[in-house]
Image 1 (cartoon, rainbow, N blue to C red):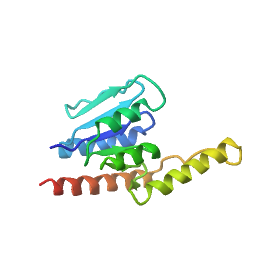
Image 2: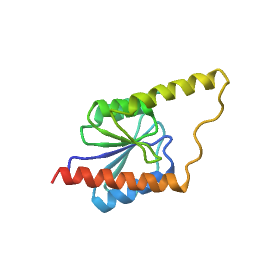
Image 3: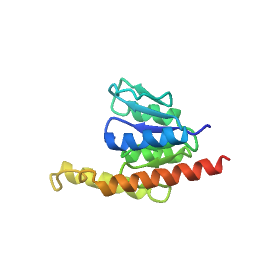
Image 4: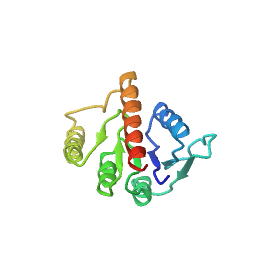
Length: 154
């Protein structure tokens, strides 16, 4: 199987990683966690991790360089999602939203606007804490993606 799941692991919630790990084991899909810090190892030969030293976007650069068309990348980082989509990969937000060619540009614009508003002090805080509906939406979206990709490859 050529497909791999990549996790932008620095900010990915543990519960989301656990959902991915279970899917990986069930379907025998390899997973690679990429982070700027050491990630705890899983007890499966299917799950690996890469620690990337370096600057702000070093982990994103590594994921982008090593992702191939059809891979799935789990990330809340919209600029990384845009890069993955441009390469023919699939990007999935930890809240279960699938980034597409149609929506990633709009999401990037909204992200940039919110960042400017925060810098000017007009908006505070970030997204709400990840809740049970988000986890369920993520698990459903991941299952649909994996089923679809695996069906295409048969």
